[in-house]
Length: 285
Image (cartoon, rainbow, N blue to C red; front, side, top):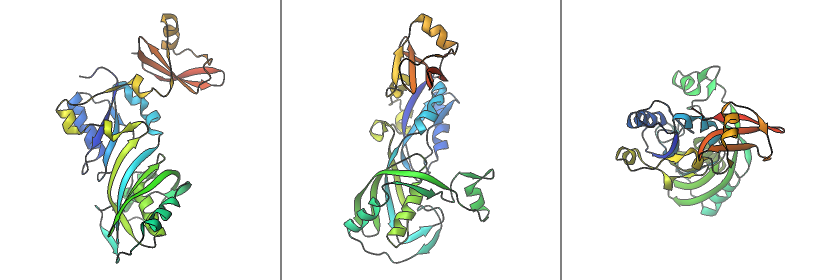
């Protein structure tokens, strides 16, 4: 049983849910306290940041980051779920474009905008998930959220398939982005495949498949490694006693977040409150 608080980067396979991954890891690591920092659709592959034991307290911090994807659009069909696994609700003959036309359309999304949440999603309206409305054929007004596209690049265009790479803010639905891209191309299309290649500082090159993990071929990240972009302060015994008991301290570091280490182990993250730092996440047993 894992007693340490760790993070592992999983390369999720397609045709399984993020919850399926967690259920498998519960059994492999013999612990129920496991969470992830961003759901991937069953069709999607790639980076799933998994936190174990007290590392689950970091999910909030690790979720609030940009994510990078490689997505493929299949032109000429539209499905109810906006991806290839859904029911086809419309078809049309595919149009022809130049790569320059497609890249110009992609570039038009390089800004902050309001994006409509897809009907088949877990976003809740009046206590009920949107996909529950969809499955019961109940009309509902889809909410909109502010998103930001930081980078977007055409990778390939062949016949009815467009592949692109995109860096997006938290909460962006690639299925909805594809719908909007197709609308600007004056056509219809659906998401054919999706790979999350990066979330924050975590990339697919440093991830492990479930098969790797089952075969004991993996590496954990410590809390110290995961939090390396924040100021880290090694404290003495006297300071440890104060921080262990959740005492606020003077913010002499002029930082929004400060990570405190004791014997090279993360014991607390403190957050700025004007001239003081106060406990934000505690890892003291």
